[in-house]
Amino acid sequence: MSKVLVLFYSYEGQTREIARIIADELHADLAEVKPVKERKTKGFAKYLWGGSQVVMKKKPALQPLERNPEQYDTLFVGTPVWASTFAPPVKSLLEDGLLQDKKIAFFYTHLGGPGKTEQNAREVLSKNNTFLGALGCANVAKHLQELRPQVVQWAQQMLERSEG
Image (tube, rainbow, N blue to C red; front, side, top):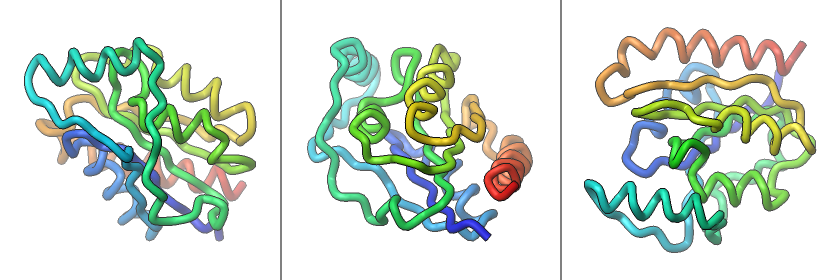
């Protein structure tokens, strides 16, 4: 059986909720990706700041991870969608060589649409890892209970794929 880690970044908590469902279902370890510095803003300023981080291709320095991904066979990586792609802390995680030779399932949360999040993640992760699949979850705050069975089923399928 694979040793599984759920890594996620969550700005407002929706991605954290999905990560917890996956970790609980698979009896996996959970670790949050945290930037060294993070600016918490609300309303329109949040979108302006977050979008500018993506447009400027920022890759913030990350705090040390609570768990070492090298000790796991299968990873689930989660992010909110910012400006049609993954959030800058996940960009740092994916593009700085922290994840190598792993089986990775990718999940993301969004309010307005996935943009190119899945495509971008697939391109980056497939370079040095086995990309198992992806799941997008829309409007988690309003639809968490409706999403739960879909998330559970997907997580189980990804784990089966990783062990197959």
